Image (cartoon, rainbow, N blue to C red; front, side, top):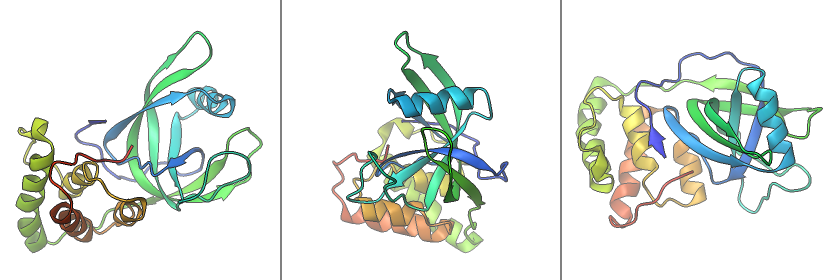
Length: 210
């Protein structure tokens, strides 16, 4: 998964958006998620969105749920993304690169298409206090670099919330752990939680979501 600098959870247009549910998959703001779209309902979803806003919500199915028949339960906090690039394959499949825009709270609404749709409410991060920022930033950056050596030149101005997100993606967290930490909008609590998990988990395990 590649990271994009400068993305934020600024206010985005709200409305009804398609949802693509997968088990334990979380789209983080400022990150790019590659997707291989092959099911007819999701091929329809991409076709529709290429003619509209290009926005899609990535939702995490709850444990024990499968995206088959019916409407399996989805975690109410999800990631809103926008199609940054796509490739249509000769057989109708798509390769899509979805750019994370914001965390959102979702509520399912009726859909007249093959795919499910949700209404989104943007979730803004609550920034850390200056004292917490000074305490957490060097620790989160050190933890991140210990698990992602390719980020040695990470710019100093990257927001603390984004650093915590990058660390979370590199931890082999269980589905319940990731769900709780992904949903935390307090930057201080999210960074503290990521550090606690980092200290408890093996340093040679390079896990992640998505």
